[in-house]
Structures are given as structure tokens and as C-alpha cells.
Image (cartoon, rainbow, N blue to C red):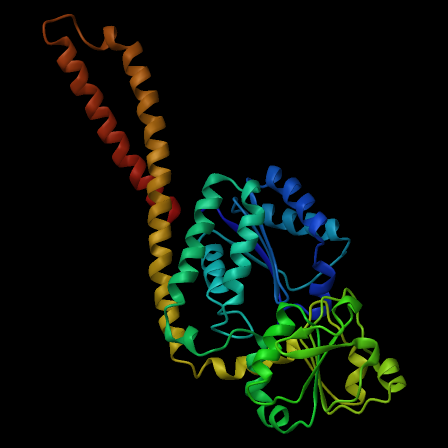
Length: 375
């Protein structure tokens, strides 16, 4: 079996709240990688707003169960249902779908490819050489599928789905407040301004207040005013807007988008307005997937690339085993040379012929064995 194991928690199967509890800080991530790399023959860790993935260089049900248990103990979360476990070729296929954005809220988005590469760089020193080679090929697969027309439609983030489904509300809004001035906030500003320029930007960081972002002045979040639409995209570790604060500020929004992880808004806001979360956008995006013909083309690319990865892995494994086998057989033959061949003028020639025959027969059998195990 292909030596690869994966456990995944992802939005749609797991709730946003569950994913929030499973997130690791930077220091915790390094500690986890160090600990797991020893026990699981190398480890790769990926955490985004839509998923958490742990990849190891082993494929075994019991090992994956232990991995899940140890991770939950590490984050202090007793139970998180709906974990997905993959091993062997299925694990490889799962990673291919992830990096091709086929399980993302926005199919065709490019963020996951970048996030995967960053996580690879952060995890590289904790991987085995074989795991590293495999994940490098997955990254190249992700680059390959991005030549498909699906990745040239201008959709780069979750805000694209929001605009697709709430286009009329966004276009007609008298005022839109965007909270967050990081990378996500900048992407949102650039996407929204194409259809509505009535934007006011807020930051929780007082040092940014008064500065410009994409030509918009940054205002203090503590001075939040009333807007028809609010879009939250901060890196706050806990909710910064709930029904109590909403009422205290006497806001009267029609629509709030919470595109952050962890979430910026409490669920109680739904009592007063339409609250759209990442989970909401995932459900909306699923409605359009079956209608997209490009997805079948992407699966064809994935299948072709996976065959190449499997063939290359088989070649590497065969080469390693066969080299070891040849060395062992030569040692055995050398030790028994005098006993196997009578003393005569062509002794050395007969000996070399015997060794070649032994090596050929053993190599053929070994190749057949590896092919059966891997495929």
C-alpha cells in the first residue's frame, strides 16, 4: 500500500465552531510537528479557514486512529466528530482534490495552492524524504490543474461566491462597512469596489487608523457607524460583534458577512438580520458545482498526474529494494563460491553467470511483488 495516511476536518462535515477549537497557534504547531514527526515517519500540517489536514508517512487504520486521538489531546478537545481518514492511494487522491480546490468553497480559487506551499515549507524539516517527494509532486499537480479555464474566471476567494449570490444587495447598498485591513480585507475591498464604491473601512488596530488602504481611509472600529452591509474579515481570536453590541450601537444592517476564522460574529445576530458565514457560502457554492463542465476536466488531469506519482513512487521503492537485494545476494554468493563451483579453468565465468541468473530471477519476482502491493 502507498505509505501515506491523512486525517482531515473540513468545513461542511465539521462545524465552524469545531474547526475554531482545532486551530493551533504558531508555537503549538511547531511543537506538534516535532512530536508527530518522530512517531509517524514524518508529518505535514495544513490549517486554513476551511480545513485542517495532517499527513503522515504511514498507512494503517490503527495508526490513523492514534493520530486523531493524539491530536485531539494536544489541542484539548475531547471529541470532534466527522473526521475523515484516508490511507494509501485514497489519501493521495484526497490531497489532489484539496490542492485543486475541488473541496473549497470557491472551486478555482488559488489560495489553497499558496497555503499548501507555505505549509510544506513550514513542515519540510519534519518530513521523511519520501513524504517530502510525494507532497512536492502534489504541489506540482496543483500547478498543473491551474492551466484549466476554470482557474481563469477571476474567482480568487470566498468573496467571489458572496458577490455571485448577493450581487443585487451589494450593488444597491448605500453604504458597505468592511472590518479588516489584512490580506483578506484588501481582497474584499478590491472585489467589492468593482460593483459598489460606497465603502468605509475599519480596523481594530489603532496604529492603522487614518492611513489609506486601496485609496480608502481606515477608520477606528470603535467608531463603527451604520451601514446596510457589514463584512467582517479580521484575525480576532474571538467574536467582536454580537447581538448585545449590535443593539448598543443601534445598528440596522440588512446583511452581515462573517468571512473570518475564527468567526468574528455570534450566531445571535441571526435574530435581527441575514448573517452569512463561511458555512453558508459553502452550501451556496455546492448548488453550482454539478453544472460546471470544467470540473470533469480537472478530474482527468488529477487522474493522469496521480498515475505518474504512483509510477514514480513504485520506481523509487523498487530501486531501493532491488539494490539491497543485489548486495545481499552477492554477499551470499561470495561466501559460498568455493562450495558452489568446482575448481576448473572457467570457474569465474560460471560463477558470474550463476550470480546474474540469481539476480535476474529475484528482480523479476520482486518487481511483481511491489506492483501487487502498491497497486
